[in-house]
Image (cartoon, rainbow, N blue to C red):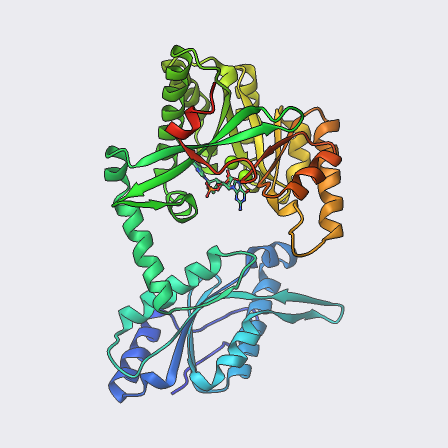
Length: 423
Ligand code: C2E
Ligand code: MG
Ligand code: MG
């Protein structure tokens, strides 16, 4: 049943499109053979870089060789179609699954006598049941799995559609759908986690962390923040959080409490918006909160694509007396330049640099030492996040860091509990 036709002209790839793919699925269902096959949707990783490096003509030849190699590897019993660009769909015999996985994980493709280029793919796979499905369900399944595979860099680039994935997708849609109502119902709560000075063990600040109390259940940000980051919802949520923090600070100041600086997390989504700085200032000033009580945390992983916008925002904040911090420092890729270029006040070293009680990791500890040294030498306030044990605490002090945040002191606390510490 194969119809995989690659044009013999070396610089063209002439294979069937989506309609052909869907017709083949219909045929297989009608023949009662669908259960023998798996469906796969894949995307060639960073293929635009291959084109940039080799030029379009050679890029196309490389793509063709990759597809030819794939066809050879999984045998004749398959249908390969192109969705467009570097996106493909495939029906393959279930017996070829191992070969397919192995092949998509990456291959050196011949360019010339002197050169090969490494091509790999991210893919969603659905091993189809014998009955009870149609072409739309199959397309939905492989599209969902392929998206998951593409969105999960550093993890597994091949994702199978299964019950768990379906449930996750359902949950994600739900989280998304109820956002507006949840915001209106004030279901998002600010929890405050103290930051502690390690010289006198006084609380010197706090981080505002979001908790969602929904239908009696407390949902942690790890579940809903990534969903809201896919849309503008995260911006609304972040500003809502900032507003709640300002409202609390105003009340504490009015009650004569000795307040501390509170940091608020800001998602990368804000960086696309030119008005972010004004929006932040407008909220803070609406509550007449002195600017020195607010700090804005930006995660390090956000920094590569948004160098200029980050620089502009951090500079604007500083000019208005508001501190900015690099959150999760040491987990991103391109931060050193930005450390030099933008006027940060605080560096928050990620907890992954702390030694685990179970294993002693010398390289990690050496990096921790040097990250602290960079921060302090450059005149930043330096804080280590996620301190859980006395050993970790001693270690960071020994290495010259005198501020910490972590379960060793407190978990993120509901506002009433946190307030008790402000005295
Ligand atoms: P983050 O900003 O790096 O916050 C620190 C996270 O580490 C928090 O997780 C905190 O509860 C956790 N943590 C603190 N001390 C310890 C410790 O000793 N051990 C361990 N294992 N964990 C510790 P949480 O509250 O679950 O938040 C996770 C992430 O979600 C945050 O990481 C932040 O990136 C994001 N997030 C939370 N609230 C907001 C928000 O309002 N807006 C945005 N954009 N992101 C938020
Ligand atoms: Mg943070
Ligand atoms: Mg952090």
